[in-house]
Amino acid sequence: MSAKRIPTVSFFRVLINASRILKNPLPFHHKNFEKHGDIFKVRLGMGKTVIFTRDAGFARYMLQKNHRNYQKSTLQTRDLARYVGEGLLTSNGEKWLKQRRLIQPAFHKKKLESIIHTMEDVIEQEFLRIEPGKTIDIFPLMNDLAFKVVAKSLFSYTDTGETIARLQYITETAQKSLIKEIRQPYKLWWFHLSGKIKKTLTLTQEARDILNTIIEERKKSNTTYDDLLDMLLASRYEDGSVMDNEQLIDEILILFTAGHETTSNALTFTLFLLALHPEIQERVYEEVSGPMNDVSPIEQIAKYQYTKQCIEESMRLYPPAYFSDRVAIEDDIYDQLTLKKGTMILISFFEVHRHKGFWNDSESFNPDRFDPGIDKKEYANWYFPFGAGPRMCIGNNFAMYEMILAVSKLVRKYKIQTNLNRIEIKPLITLKPQNASITCTSR
Image 1 (cartoon, rainbow, N blue to C red):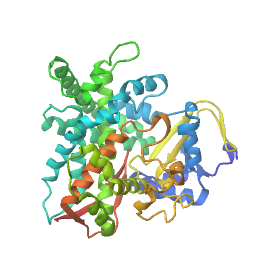
Image 2: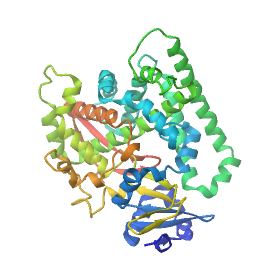
Image 3: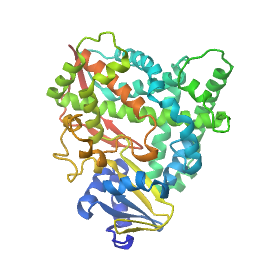
Image 4: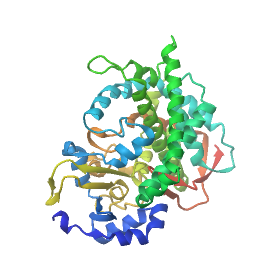
């Protein structure tokens, strides 16, 4: 089919659904997918349109097979970059490639082993805040935990009290501001006129000043901390040069934003799903409750296969990075679909991960889908927890280590229960959980 014959959702339909789209656009998109199929077009007004897809083949084609012809849209390279800088997540082309090559070694599995103990210390410290028998919303705890893991992994020596709390507040405030701009583009003039954007930019500059101070202090220090900041400061471009402070700050802000957001969301969803499925939780407990022996943390993590499967299945049902977007650089054709230069496509990983054509009993929580005995070809082509292709999340191993450690330590110590029968979701830049109330009872 040609681009002209793609089923189209009118701008009128968008306007009359504006309030529900702002609150949660996923039901609106799902209704359109069910009505129009795996690809449809939405008119956004002012002559702008975007193609929505849950076609896994099309997604992989853009992200992997023909990735050179598709780059990130201005939603990330301009709008998000305004608040977090032009780093690995928000850059395109040669700049992205240059930064990826520079930063990749810092996230190699061997390098990450050196910060596993830091992860463990933060997790154990945060779990001391849990009051056995008391019902709590687990998300704020997981959010603080994930932010502190990133902070201490980056700046192992830095005080993580008021400074880190301030950085956390700024990154979360910037996200809330950005999501309003994205979902209500027709009100952008008001956000500028009212000073809302200027206020958020002032906050993000404060974060940049804080990080610049930390970087300068580290450069003057004669101590080696073997953390991520040390690794980034030691990194060299092909010509032997190093990142300047502004670029370092861009990358660090992105690590904070992307690194803690996605992990805290995934952890909360996983723990809540385990509370909803006590029989699966008991299988995790059986796996993690054995003697620790004299193995390294990284070896212990490798043994927790079923725990890992639970996290993988949680990220299928509730992918933190629940969408991505691409813009065609040149004219292209995919499976008889004509794509003109400049066409913007939004990929719904949330829909791909629940597509009945790809997954049996797609709405159920079944970690056995990811049993190592199952051929990965059964799901690899339609599973995107960390994206796909050259721009796959650089911190995927970091995140998985952290999540396995957190889930295993919590289940080993507590039985998790909930009085709720489902979890609510709040889609922002990432897919956030809402009202994730659980009770932890000492085992």
